[in-house]
Amino acid sequence: MKNFKLALVALALIGLTGIANAGGVGYIDYARVIDNYAYAKQVTKEVDAKGLEMQQFLVDKEKEYKSLDTPLKKQSFEEKVSQEFKAKETAYVTLKNKREQEVFTKIKDAAKAVMVEQKLDAVMDVRGVFVGGLDSATGAFGSVGISDNNFRGLNQRVSLTGLVGSGILMSDSSIKSHMNYQAELSFFEPHFLNSDNSLMSKIYYRDLGSYRIPLALERRIGLEGTVAHRLKYNKNLSSTLTAGVEYIHLEEGDEAGTKNLYNLHHLNIADRAQQLEGGFFLKLAPGLSYDSRDSAVNPRHGALASIRYEEAFGLDGFGKTNGRLTGMAKRYIPIAKKSSLTLTGRGGIKVHGSDMPEIMAYRLGGPYTIRGYKVNGVGTGTSFIMGSAELATPIPFVDRLKVNFLQNLRLTFWVDAGRVFDPTISSVLYDRPIQAITAGIGLKVNMPGVGPLSVDYGFPLTNPGPNGSPNGYFTFGVGDMMY
Image 1 (cartoon, rainbow, N blue to C red):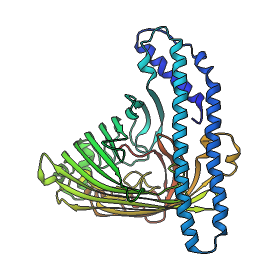
Image 2: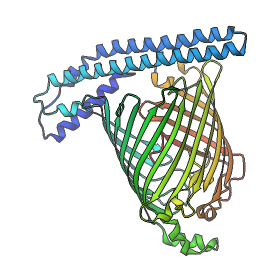
Image 3: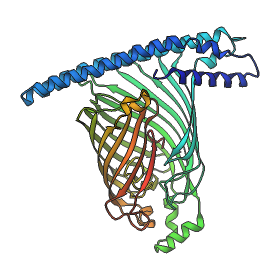
Image 4: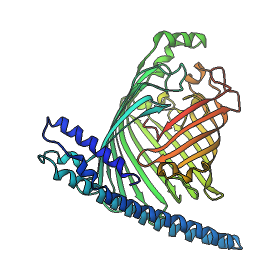
């Protein structure tokens, strides 16, 4: 919706791909499609006006809030405004999605009108995207995806994505250089059995140089489904239940390098077989999540929290069965007019499973945990705890530019701290510091459908160990990790 010219370009690329695959069925005169852009501009103005109306609502309410004289009045006022804003935000998203579909339909109809034959209809009913760039977890990568956001006309979503990467960036010698291949087919049902439930299911394949087990190659194949249920007595609280099966295969990536490491630390090389233990698992994971954020893009008020227990049953050896409990909580505090302070706490612990494979251990270090360290640079263990404080603020004068993309860009200042417990063999082999405190600065922008894109530079405030750098590192993050 923010830039329909981009949508037209993407549509053209999809059409051209379809024609090539159809062996010359026909052609599309895209000048006719672009002629319909006047309507798109009209819709853009309508949606932008609705967004400005929401911004003005917050400004007006902030003035009212400042005039209140007691904490009780302020608390009551905050709760009331939060409910009103949620309703406005829902109406805004509904309008935005409706208008977007209208524009896409008009473009599709215009394209159909100039088709020589109707054999490309299926191509026009789906959307595709190609992304390339850099990421700490995949290296130089290319990602291609195709999705249908109204599958069978029932508002269901089907998506197929693939990723090819050159390998882990900002990693150390513990990660075997290996091409990264990933593919995922997902299906989302927004009304599963009734309107309070949703279903997300996926099938995936991953082949990469393992960043959990040093110098190993890792392959995963899995099937997973998650049912989410919104609780009626608290609209911000949802329960989830995830079930799935996963096959994990590990193999040696550098036999000579591994032997040298074990000899250097006077460890028995026979223990390597235990490190490389994968397995076939049935997983069940109930959970609870709480979300009272005022916005999913750049939240300034509210909280986000979740807790999840995962039981992994070893189907090829019951001794591998284990259970883990993981939790997270975030609090968003508004600062000045447009900035925010985010306080985050996370933790995880192995509840049972003395023979839990090391591949399932927790890890710290990298763009998604302790920034300023390479992937796994802090350590791996059977439990962990970490926290962070991050101040996010708009870049000065960017709001004067008429580029919607830049309106979501934030300059961040942060501190991360964390520790792993009961370190694994990998932490011993590479002399990980086990605990760390870092500080740094970064840039972050939230992209719809992708998530947060971030680049950060952090440096350690504690001893980084012999394999770390006292000067810190840059880290690059793209959305949430696929793995």
